[in-house]
Amino acid sequence: MSCDMAKMRTIKAAIRHIREADLDTAFTEYALRKLVLSGTISHIKIGSKRLVNLDDVEQYLAGSSTSSSAEAEAQCDNVVQLSELRKVG
Image (cartoon, rainbow, N blue to C red):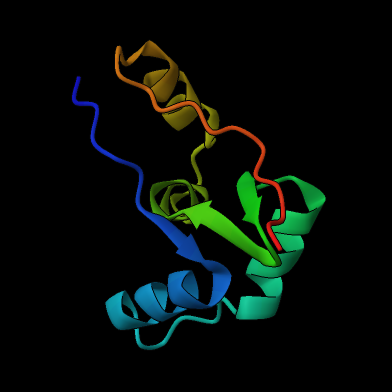
């Protein structure tokens, strides 16, 4: 199993990536945002931006659960722990 760095993207960038792969997609930025806000697709919030793991979004669209990605990440030896960021200034 490889411990590659997660491909974290803003919601807009994730939709851009999906549209590049499938020009006729009906999946919208609004739909992804609703999935993120409902907790169906996990995210991290940095400032006012919500970042999603592109692999998790692709897994969701393929009909798989995103939990396998989280389990694989937890097994990696060099998982980077993200701490809560505080506003500076």
